[in-house]
Amino acid sequence: MIYAVITAVLWVAGLLLVPAERFRLLLPFGLLAGFGLAAIINLMGSSVMGLWEFHRTGLLAVRGVPLMALLAWVPVVIVFVRFLPQAALPRLAWLLAFPLGYTALEYLLLRLGARSFAAGWNLEYSFALSLAVHVGVLAWYRTIEPERLR
Image 1 (cartoon, one colour):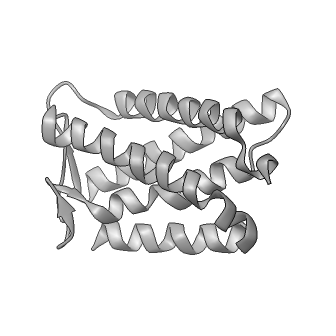
Image 2 (tube, one colour; image 1 turned 135 degrees about the vertical axis):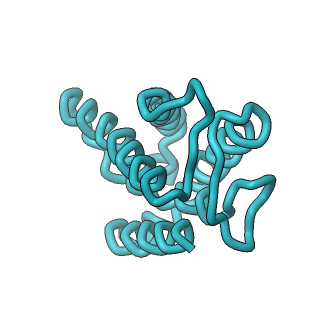
């Protein structure tokens, strides 16, 4: 249930923050870079490598990964690229804000018993992984920028 609530809040926030036309334009990128990458990373990290585990997944889970946790990344990626600052220093702050937010949310999930880590995995590694993913998403987005293709 916790993953469904988080996903609903993030989708509502994304739909309120990003104008509908821009949201639709960015949705394919959000699905690939949000849902797609989250699916690969979480299936590898939890089901294959056993670095972390989801608890209280609800009915919709794939190999122990809640579908809601994957869907939550779609609006996050859309907001991330939609409001990406152009200047270098604000862009760096924006780039760091998302992994920090993710790490704070993961800490909350750990405290609530909705996630657990295997020995050898910790919040610092989660932050580093999230930072690497956001750098990759930023680089990927900058190569295609669907808003400019229109």
